Image (cartoon, rainbow, N blue to C red; front, side, top):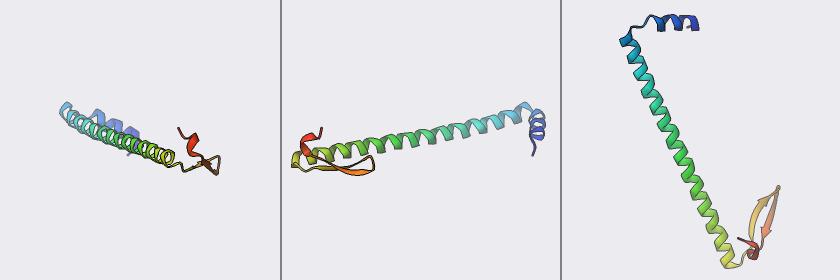
Length: 85
């Protein structure tokens, strides 16, 4: 269907038909926004969990006195426990 045909079909709709289509699009849009919100919430929860896990690992290494191995500039670097924040 061409854009011209779509415009012609929309113009020929009655007010009731247009209202039904509009309502359907509004529900579709609301559902889509709800899904986006869920994905953002999940992403934020995952990021928070990752940060807490990293803090836990750093704290464990600091308490035990073990160096922490990290990836920096394409290389593995050991950070002494004394330098951990």
